[in-house]
Each structure stands twice: as C-alpha cells, then as structure tokens.
Image 1 (cartoon, rainbow, N blue to C red):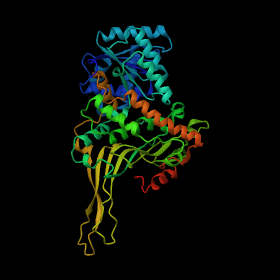
Image 2 (image 1 turned 60 degrees about the vertical axis):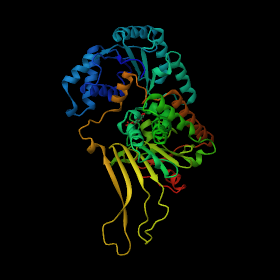
Image 3 (image 1 turned 90 degrees about the horizontal axis):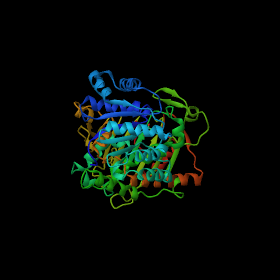
Image 4 (image 1 turned 45 degrees about the horizontal axis):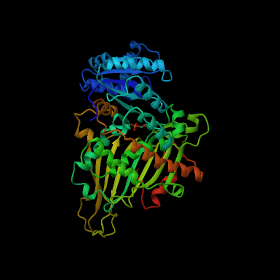
Amino acid sequence: MTGTTASLLTIFGATGDLARRMLLPSLYGLERDGLLPPSLRILGTARSELDLDGFRALVAEAVERQLPGSDRDPAALAALLRRIHYQPAALDDDASLRALCDTITALRDGGDVVCHLSTAPRWYAPVCDALGAHGLGGAGTRVMLEKPLGHDLASATAINDGVARVFDEDRVFRVDHYLGKEGVQNLLALRFGNALFEPLWNARHIEQVQITVAETVGVEGRGDYYDDSGASRDMLQNHLLQLLCLVAIEPPSRFEPTAVRNEKIKVLRSLRPIGRDEVAGETVTGQYTAGAVGGVAVPGYLDELGRASSTETFVALRAQVDNWRWKGVPFYLRTGKRMPQRCTEIYLQFRAVPHSIFDHGGAPLQPNALVIRLQPDERIELRMMHKTPGLDRNGLQLSQVALDLDMQEQFAAHRRRLAYERLYLDAIEGNGTLFVRRDETEAAWQWIDAIHDGWRHAGITPRPYPAGTWGPSRAVTLAERHGHAWRE
Ligand code: BG6
C-alpha cells in the first residue's frame, strides 16, 4: 500500500466522455454500496465554465443515463452529489492551475489526494509539474494516468520522465481498465487458486493460446484520436498484452503490487520481437469497409472518418513467449472494430491425446480446451470428450461437451461492477496491484514499435474487411499456416 486512504479524489477531464460513461457511474456504484470512505470528497475539473450546480446536474445525468432504472437509488445519488465539488481550470494557464491546486489543498484537508488525469496525455507532465510547483508534489499525492500513455516508446518515456520529475513510481497509477474487470482478475484466481491447472499450464500440455477482443462498435465519434492510434496502439499495446501477461506469468509469491508486476514484466520481456523480417508472416492488419453488424447496415471506416487513412481497425498476430514455460506455444492475438459480435475471450487448447484407442473411423477426438470468456458474459468452459449415449455396437462414439461455469448464474446475488469501481477503490486506498508499472508500459511499447517499424519498412497497409466479419481472410491463414484455426 502507498500512503493512507485518500480524503480527496480530483478528476481532471471531469466533463469528458470517459467521465460521463464510466468514472461518474462507478463512483455512484461505490457510493450506493457504502464503499467510499465517509469523508472522501470528489473534485471535478475541466475547461468548461460550469458552476457547482451545473456540474452536479452533469453527474446526475451521467449516472441516470448509464445505469438501468433498477440500479438507481435517489438517496445514494444525493449522497454522491454532496461529496462533489467543481472548479474549472485551463491546463495551459498557470494562474488557473495554481488556483486549482489551492482548492485541492483546501479540500484534502491534510489527507492524501488522488489526481486522476483523464485528459489528453500531453498534459500529464505539465499538470504534474504544476502539482509539484504548487505544493502537491509530496508523498500525500497519487496520480492516476489514463491510456494512451504515449504513441510509441519515445513519447511514453518522455511522459513517464515528466511525471517522474515530480512523483516517485509508487505514486503513479497507470490505468488499464481491463485490469479492473472481474473476469480479468479471475484469471489469477483460476490459475493460482486451483492446483488443478498449474501442472498443465505450459508448453508440454498446451498446444496454442488465442486471445480475442472483438468489438461490434466502430470509432464512435473518436475518429481523431483513433486514427492516430489504430487497433495496435489502442488495444494491443495495453489490453491484449495485459491479458497475455496474466495467462503467461509465473506464480507471484503474493497478490501484491511488486510481486505481481515483477512477474508481468518478465513475460513482456520474453516476447519474441516481431520486426522487419517477421511482420509479413506473423501479423495481419485490416480496415473495415461498409457492411452489416447484427443485421444493421454500417458505413466503412473511411466514411466515418471522412478522409483517407491507412490506420488499422483490426490486427491479428502470432506472438511467442520465449521462456522455459512457453517455448514454442503460439499466442494468437486479435482485436478489431466492427466484428460480428462483441466478445473478449481467452482460449487455451491442450495437446491431443498421444494415441487414440477409439480407432473406429468415427469423428476424430477433439483436443481439450479451456475457454475463458470475459465479455459480454463471464463464463468458463472446459471442453472435453464424452461418450455419446447409445449402444455403440460399431465402436464407442464420442462427442465434445463442455463443463460450463456461468458466473452470472453462480454469483447471481453479486452485482457486476464497472472496472473503475475497483480501480478507484484501489487508488483511493493506495494499492497499485491492478495498475501498470512504468517498465511494463515501456516494454510493451518497445515490442509494438518493432511491429510498426516492420510495417513501415515493408510498406504493409491494412487489408479491407467488410464490417460484420472476422477481419481479412489473411487472418485465417495466419493461424492455418501453423495448423491452427481461430475459434469462432
Ligand atoms: C478502450 C479503447 O481502451 O477500450 C476503445 O480506447 C475500446 O477503443 C475500449 O472500445 C473497449 O473497452 P471495453 O471495456 O468495452 O471492452
């Protein structure tokens, strides 16, 4: 733990899209369940010249818009609004920042403060400088940084250096909201809370791993940001690599920040570089064209953007973790916008039985597989062969069936939490386990940079794929070339 429970949470960018969709509804969820520290105050700041009533109205509207009627509790909303303060600030104006820091100092009332920078990353270093210059650089301040943390290794390093001028690493909480998701944390529970899987969790028993993060949405009015990033920077560098880390890590000695992150960084550093000589064979990029998703016609990326672009909205690749445990096991990663369905899933296929005793010309034995589904529903399926009922006079017939654990059913009494509920509580309490350490983010950028360099060097541009499909057909051949098939 770093510091003591905070007495003030300051959200920079408090009127923005992320705040309305995720941050404010998460704070409401915590309030409703009595999880916010009683004396915690919340200060919103943004450029918008709102007064307190105006900002409280924005908070109420955000909560009401995001949460179904059954989740709304007027008393909880009123309690949340009582904690809320607002002060406009222009981040490029020192007088304005100084006034903001004075307000923070007054509201924190001697306690710790969490400053959540939900702004464009170019402001991270200047805001940290201002916090430092105006008396908030000490041990009592923690900063939460939103992604994207840079655009490549050089820009990420510059941001991290800027932040580090004011804050020690243990005060810096880099958000990857996937780590706040229940199902993602459950990966650690599954692996390290059960003795069953660990002996099988390695190259001797696992044939291949697939990690899919598929979205049905397009760029949703975020074209300017997205076009600068593409799927590789927006999703692969952070969310998919974090998922890969949790699948691949060695057992940490304890569930605490240093132990967990020390193991994750080892995985990132074991990733085999995919560079100029490998990109053509190991990666596929795509960009959606007009099509239909869920029976609804949708425009292509370029129409949504309104200009020409060679940004990828889909990326698939074959990664390799070069260490003792995983040598030779392909990790197929793919993510894309305008896919046929929303689905975040990890699929581990075990090796086939060494010899089948059921050699009767029936359907071939399917290898066992563990399917960990994180979104939209949370479930775990263990796929195994089972005798098909019948007299089988021509030899046993087997079919593949699934042991299926549905989290919604299993934990029906538990409310599904927004990722930021968990992340806010941890930041308020100073627990960095589910935040990304500087070395992780930089190692991930280094690996992604090599891929971008390869794409540039080889002149690789995204192939078109119709919206509502699983990306360019090349993605299929990427896996097929190695005797594997994507799970669909
Ligand atoms: C964000 C990306 O980090 O994650 C978005 O910037 C993406 O482009 C989003 O849509 C997906 O998050 P989730 O929680 O909906 O899977």
